[in-house]
Every structure is written in structure tokens, then in C-alpha cells.
Image 1 (cartoon, rainbow, N blue to C red):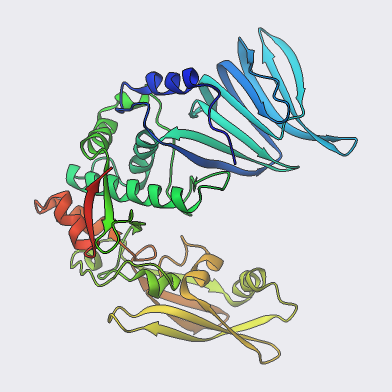
Image 2 (image 1 turned 45 degrees about the vertical axis):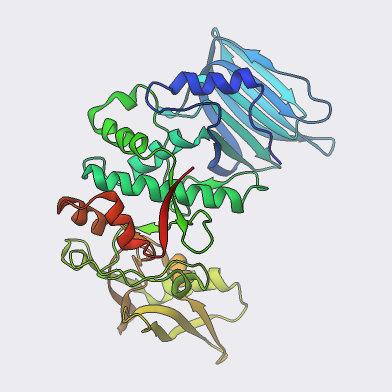
Length: 397
């Protein structure tokens, strides 16, 4: 398991450094966020950089001062892998080699391509490695809410988003406690970008910070077992939310929340065209069969909630074999941004398939566009959350 932080003193330093915009204390949980994956190298810069490795024996903390730029790579020598740091300090190029299993780096003003990075990074992997940021929970939520929902939206919508994101995060942290990271920084979990203290002073960001602080410690829990709810959310339900079971085959989130406003939004209805051969390429990559996929044989819809989302897609192969996958797997194969939801129909148009659909996202849990509409009508974040998570209650950590 990854060790977090060098010492208690350094951990408190992280909290004090950014406590100007997020309330935090020594009990704040750290979230491990994978911000890069399968990298050959990683370039960044920083001040007062401290390095520690996880190995036996540990060589303690090493400090680099006056850093202008750093490059982390992996090199193999005599069948053993090493971490290599190439860096520039006071105009001089330097190089250090470490035999650690994991490399932990902390520092002030860490930057990558002009984007602020959290103050603690973990590098872990073999020839290719992941970069994992360690962020206190409430600071992490500022970076999520500001990227998952427009900062100009009503404050009650932002509060609802903050509670949903906090609940999802804590539920996933428990599920993945033994992994090297808890969450991805992408749509595969929650979109996250670190918010530096300087950027936190902007007027728009102050609204996000207000929403996170006003709901600090508030979470969604199941009414039956009081466990933290894995509170999924999405952009646009297209008129009605779906259950987690109909999308992934498991989970306890019920669907059926009706949003009259969603079908009327400008981007709710969409079309997507793809060449048949291009679709075959994507399906070949998904199935990894030696036999080529040839066509979309059939679509199975979930009519239990009168939502008409595609639950299963059956693909026909050139040898006559047919294989069925979930609508969500099919979306992932074609691209989540292209096939925007499983609420679609498909027709053949010459050498192309034409998809016509509604909504954006998996459709489970909180609908962000519906949340905006409810907040604009004067409904509170509590009322919004009750609308989308009808089988849950709100508790405090």
C-alpha cells in the first residue's frame, strides 16, 4: 500500500499552505488522484522540492533547492529499474538516480505546463509509471466541482454537486483502499484539476469554495444501511434518469426521476455518424477476436422505466457468431463524447451508421442540467438531492 506523506509536520504544512480557501484540519482525509498514467517521463518545476522513496531500507528525505525544472524517467540497468531525476538548479544541470520502488516528491509551487500541481506527488510503476497526486478531501472537491459544473450556476446547484461528489469520493475510497490510487482525474471517475491558492481568489471560484465549505462533511447515505452512497451524476438525463442496475448491472441507485427541462436544452438532442469500417475497427479493438465484427445485429432496450435506453447491443461477426455487450460498453468503445448516451436509435445510411439520441452521460443519479433548472426555480440543494437520490438520506461525517 502507498505510504502518504513524509512526516506529521509535512502533512500539517500541506493543510496550512492552502487553508486560506478551504477549511481543513488534521482529520482531513487525503485523496489519491491518478493525474497521469503509463508515462515514460514527466516534466515539471517547483520550489523547495523534497524527495523520499519507499524501499528497504529508506534513505530518508532529500531536499533540492533552487529548482528550475525537473524530469522524472525510469531506466533499467543490470535488470534493475531506477528512478532518474534530471533537473536544473541555479543554471546547472544535475542528475540523480534512486533505486526506490516508489518515488514521493513534495514541494511548493509545483507546475506542469503552467498548470498548478498539488504539493505531494507519488510516482509508481515499472518501465511506464503513474503519477498520483495526494490532496486533502475538501481541496480535492474544489477541483472537482469547478470542473464538473459551470462555476456561474446557482449556488444551490453547486452545493448539490459538492455533496454528490463528496459522497462518490468517499464511497470509492473505501472500495479502492488497497489500490495505489483512489480516483482518476478524468470522466472515468470525476474531472479534477488542482486549484492553486492564487486562482482560488477569483470571483467565480469563490462560489465553488462557498458551496464546498457550506456543505463540509455532508454526505448521502443509504436509508437501509447508512453506508455512504456511491452518488453517480451526469450532465443531461434527456428527460428521465436511469437506474444503476440497468446501466452497469449492479448498484442501488433507482432511476425514474423526471426532468421536464432536460429535453428542451440546446444540446440535449444529438446525432452521430460513423463509417461502418471505422465502427468495425473500434469493435475489433474491444472484442480482440480473430474473427471480424461485421454489423450491429440488434439493440435491446430497457423499457422497465419507460426510459428506452439501450441496455444491450448485439454485434454480428463474419462467421455468423453474435456477441452481446452492454450499452455502456458500446458507448465506451465508440467514445463517450461521440455516442453521448445510451438513449439512442441507429439506422444504416449507405456505408455509415447514423445514431440519433438524447441526453449526455450514463443517466444515473444527479442530472446536472436538471439540477440547474431546479435551482433556478428556487429549490434548495436538499430538495434537489431528494429528487435524484430518493432512496437515500443526508448525513454528516
